[in-house]
Length: 136
Image (tube, one colour):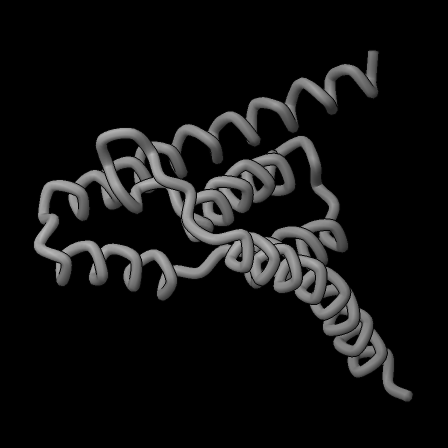
C-alpha cells in the first residue's frame, strides 16, 4: 500500500473514531428533550448544549500549544463535527420564529454566538494553562 493511501486511511479512521461518540452524545442530548431557560423558551436546548460543549472542546483541542494533529482529527473534526451542527441551530431559530417569538429567536442567536465565542476562547486558554502545567 502506498504511504499516502495509508496516511489517508489512518486519518479517516481517526475522524470516524471521533465522529461516532460525538454523534451518540448528540443523539443522547436530543433524546433528553428540551431544557427551558427562564424567560426564554427554547433558548437552552439540546442543540445549544451540544454546540456549547463543542465550542469549549474545539478551543481546547485547537489551542496553539496543543499541536497534536491526530487529536485535532479525532476530537476537533470527528467528535465536535458530529456533535455540533449549524443546521440544528438554524432549525431551532426557525422554529422559534414560526412560533411568533422573534425576541426569543434573537436570544437564541445572540446567546449561541456570544456563548460559543466565550467558550472557544476559554478552551484556548485552558489549553495553554494545561500545556504550561505539563512543562512546569
